[in-house]
Image (cartoon, rainbow, N blue to C red; front, side):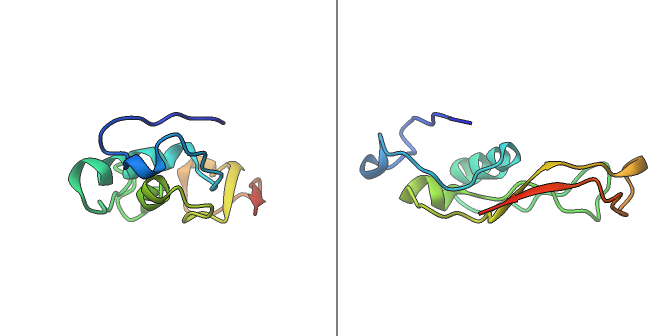
Length: 96
């Protein structure tokens, strides 16, 4: 899915660049928090505090227009019955 990011935090050297790194929608929150705070922010799921937030900080991809980011695969669909930690086997992943 195409996305556009603009603003003064984006270095002039990468403005207008196309980034083809694998980037999931849930990566935007930790990435933008890093942009605002200047540091990586560890997020935890409020519904289940022992499970880390799924999003990955991709700020380095944004500021360097890197071809490869923190992700090597993206889960397209998942089903955790009753939101338990036990997988149901209904996951579909795309790897690059």
